[in-house]
Length: 159
Image 1 (cartoon, rainbow, N blue to C red):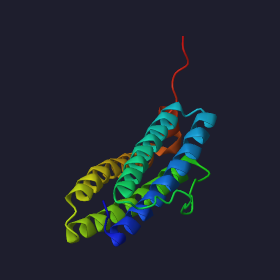
Image 2: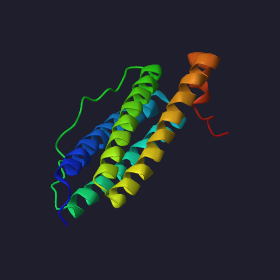
Image 3: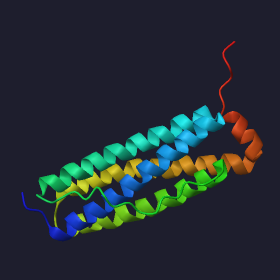
Image 4: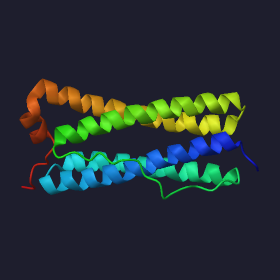
């Protein structure tokens, strides 16, 4: 089915966002594992897996519209050198992504594409969950201090 060209362009832009954060989160997840913060490793890895689903869904929608998914474009990746920087970078990245999805939803409404509207809304809700997670982490760091926060991100060794 031929799709709206402007919407396909926007879907490809969202795909670039998703592919970028997949890479960003996988690097960060492995950094956290290397530092011994296994809870953070698992949480960030799960978010990377969510982003992989989003990318898969966007690719499927672009192909459905007889478009060409552009998988070679990445935006600048913001990894960070500390846990605080990682959390801050991810929160900022997710806020930008949420804004992009809201703009894409407006376009889907304008071109009367209910299927894309539903897909983008589903992804938006997941992305808002990622923002919520990052904001909770930032609040915990502010409230308990970075040292106590980091202790809470390790798992006790097996007895």
